[in-house]
Amino acid sequence: MWTIILVVSCFSCSVSGQLQWRLITEGATGGPPARRDAAIGYDEVGSKVILFGGRGDDNKIFGDTWIYEIIPRKWTKLNVTGPGARFSVVSGVKDSKFYVATGQGLIEYFFDDIWKFDIQKETWEELPAQHQPFYYTDQRWKQLQREQLKPKVRYGAAGGIFKDSSSARFYLSMGFSQKRYSDTFSYSFSEQGWFQDYPDLNPYNPSYPHARCLHAGTMISRDELLIFGGCLSGGGTGGPCPSGDSWIFNGKTKHWKQLHSCAAARIYSTLAMLPIKSEERRAILFGGQVNSSQVIYTVEPSADQIGVFNPYTEKWTLRRTVGKIPSRRASVAMATGLTGVYMFGGFDLETAKVLDEFYELVGDASMADKAPLAADCSPTFFTQIMLHGIFMALAWGFFLPWGAFIARHMKHREPLWFHLHRLFQVTGLMLAIAGVVCAILSVQFDHVTFVHAIIGTIVMIIGIQQPMNAIIRCPKPEDGERKTLRRAVWEFMHRFLGHSAIYLGLANIGLGLFLAMAHQIIWIVWFSYLGFLLIAHVIAELIRQYRWSHGSLEENLKMSTINKYVINDSCENNAYEDH
Image 1 (cartoon, rainbow, N blue to C red):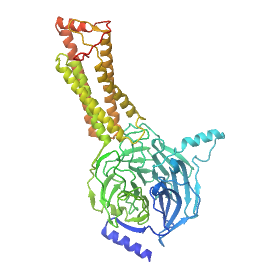
Image 2 (image 1 turned 180 degrees about the vertical axis):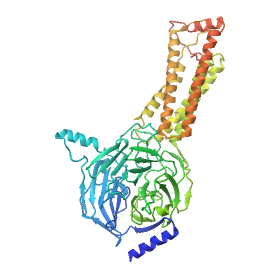
Image 3 (image 1 turned 135 degrees about the horizontal axis):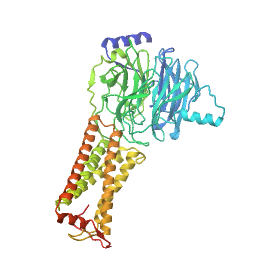
Image 4 (image 1 turned 30 degrees about the vertical axis):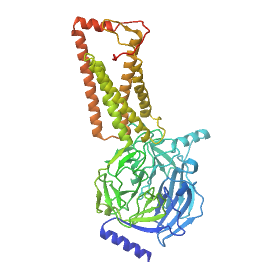
């Protein structure tokens, strides 16, 4: 009977040519308790869904294993001993074996292990982390090699196994424990060990994704991993949280490729492959949390919206689904079945409750492009980190550099130069302070633990010190007078610190563009502006030297006299600065 219902359901979906949600169970007696961030898989041989772990209300962490039999539509809790209780793991199914790796347990305990669940025998087994056979004899050397080759403890990573490949590896990418990771590993089942396919590298390189966690991921072919979004802020890095970038990692070439943005930025979203049909492959993006303390404005996707990724064109589209539409939610578990994608649980974004609903999105890859478009690929997104970048670009990229330019090259327009210099420096400093406030709000934690933040802190300390330094300046010598030693030292330190802060600030804006993953047009504008700024300074300096060498004798003698000094310990405030 249930087979007939399932066939009819799939037939109605195929007739409509759309992806259709159907609710399988909702809080059924004897089913898994409500949970989020669980691991899930589907076994074609036994037509079973496997559910493991996750976390529930009040941060209760599960370590239980459940089986759902498609026929006769029944949940069964297995009495087995396996991995410790955990959530936010990476999982996948291959040859009737369900694999889970890493995750977070009780009291922020993180895992670095990998386990295999034999679906037919219903037994768990921990797999070795090192390649086999192992030819070393020294036990300490063995341990060192084992620690180096496997992923470090983490949760919130992404990966899995490609469904239709017997020789596929288990991939695991990025995640978080004490820091954000940007590395990628693959586990070889034949060699019984991990391989590091991509190391944990410099976060300021735009040719590969920045370190992150809580991102979505799925295998779109045997050696291709698709990831989307996540949190890039905190844990030794800075960046958007949530993020809306998507990348493909090729395990053969060991190369990352960035894709065009489409869906709204989010964390706790889920990626899964639709069932392959006539060689067609499509991945879907579902759910996720688009708001955080960093977000100022974003557009919430509708509950019926999913992202659809075409691996052949490497393009995203936003599509609508029909049927029993699930509420907007995050942290769901999704697995590819024969007739669609199974989904369990999650966190309801409207009610803030953990869910126990079990759905299927009925349909295959051939139907994905037939679903009506939900929206254009033009995500509207504005965050504290963007506002921080705007403030800092205006402060250290415009007002403060041009204020220093005025002080050096407009002395002949006294007192106009001083008033302009003061206006530019005060405005720039106020904008910079506003930028610091936004920076503090945009980084979740570990604020001064990465290069951009360290340089920014140094620059701001110097910047705030400069006006204080100006208050205690010594008087400028009158015409014909020689400057004091204190005046000469003050001028040197004021110029040196000011210029150092500006140079560091300009460089740090460039680093910030890497962290913020700025669009190419912003890079072009910024470096074009830097070129203009450099040319303006060179031309002004040449004019200044020309005026010195071709100026009147009286002017040259005056400048020469001013550059001399005598020892004089008296200092008083003066109306104008001299640089």
